[in-house]
Each structure stands twice: as structure tokens, then as C-alpha cells.
Length: 224
Ligand code: SF4
Image (cartoon, rainbow, N blue to C red):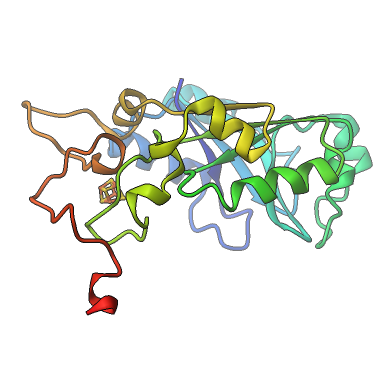
């Protein structure tokens, strides 16, 4: 099942579409989604009933929340009555311990490039009281530099190019670590059609869509 875990409707201050419009858009674009999770800002919407829309569009519509903390925005899933009673979703600068103390936490990030920001984030979650921290990355392992404009650095700096999965897990201090497979990524964004590659996957598999100067890195011009 493929869900968009981070969506906003007009109930959020930066939301532009009603949930109905969002569902229409998913169907019109034929996006490979089975549903969405509404993570409205600073609130948990326990009033709206989207069951009619679920039936109309054949989509699962779940509810979560996006709260603001001293450490940045945090998506809160699995909201139940106890949490709604105990927690002020509207408060800015929510202290993370109220959310994390004693919990098994799954931290989802888009990538691990050098690994230098992931470890401090895992450590911060532990300091805030998380009992376990499981890291899940929604891209495959980044093992090759990007020559198309994304600042990924040299190959030797890419942690997945030089470390095994277990070594990376130990380096970032997580209880477990998992990546999305390349097949899973391509299934999520739309597979190749007519045998033609539609997506660049070079930083995952080293298959560059154009000839690239493998012996040149991003500092070549600075060095003259
Ligand atoms: S997928 Fe291609 S363009 Fe995108 S970051 Fe990786 S190498 Fe660069």
C-alpha cells in the first residue's frame, strides 16, 4: 500500500485544496497512491468525517498532525484519545519529551548522504526520552555522486559507498535502519514505460543518463 504521509487541506494555514479536490487530483493524475494522511498544522482534526470521500474515490484517508517543536516540525501519527487529552497540538515550541518519552520512535528521512546530520538527530530523539529509534529512509542508498546539480559531494564522502548497512546503523546510533529499494522507488514514482528510462537513478546505481566526467568533482573549478 502506498500512502502520501504528509498532506494538508484548507484546514491548515498553508493548505490550498479541500480534501475532495486533493482526491480528484490524485485520480485525474493517475498517481499510484492508495491513500493520504492529513497532517494538518498544529491541530488534530477529530471532527471531519471523510468516509464518503473514501468510498467515492477508493482512497484511504487517515488523520495525523504536524506540530511545531523547539527542534522543528514533527509529524505525529497514531494519534489516539489519550494523546489528544494530554497534548496541546496548537502550542508552538512543544517540548519533545511530552511526545517521545518511553516511546519506540520511527524516524523517517528522505536520504542519508554523508550521515553527519542523521546521527545528531537520532541522539536528540534519545535525549528527549525515546526508548528506541528506528530509522527508515525513503530512497535507496546513495552510493554515487550527482553530476546533475545536487550537491552530494565526492563518492568517498557518501556513507553508503563506503559502509555496509550495519556499519551505517552503528554510525548513526539507530536501533534499526532500512532503506526503500530502488524497485520500490520506481514503483512509487511510475515504472519505466516502453523500455525507456523515465527517471534518473544514477546516485543509487551509477547508471548516469548522460556521459559524466567521473574524475571531476564539485571542487574542480575552485581548485582552478
Ligand atoms: S537521481 Fe540523478 S539527478 Fe537526482 S540526485 Fe541522483 S544522480 Fe542527481
